[in-house]
Length: 159
Image (cartoon, rainbow, N blue to C red; front, side):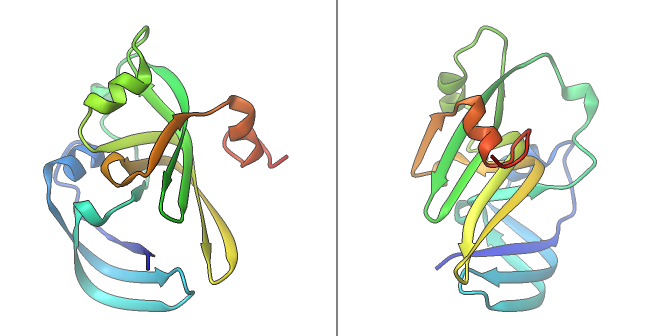
């Protein structure tokens, strides 16, 4: 059970995170499924419920710069089923990042992120400048140590 889905999505919001938090279902085009068993399938179109998403790897360009403001980066680790995600959560300077996380909408962006999972007995490590994580799908979330992130390839080489 579980698979990666790649597809095209029409961005009808200023930021992908806003689109994901504002929709219960996403319409994808040119879809490729990679099962955790290694099986690959394709479809011209697919409908995906947001509740079924674990994370969404965002492509460039990043969201509208006008919406950015100074933040403090908190390294976190997220586990959801067979997936482990590492990256930086952004919160207001001086705010408790983990408390802020619980008050945000369910789809939360992490920067300089990595998602690790096994496909057909092969350990995969995919990196993303932004990985939007579904907090509601997470089994656990905890702060990470900088050296922990460096060991798995976030902001540094694999140790």
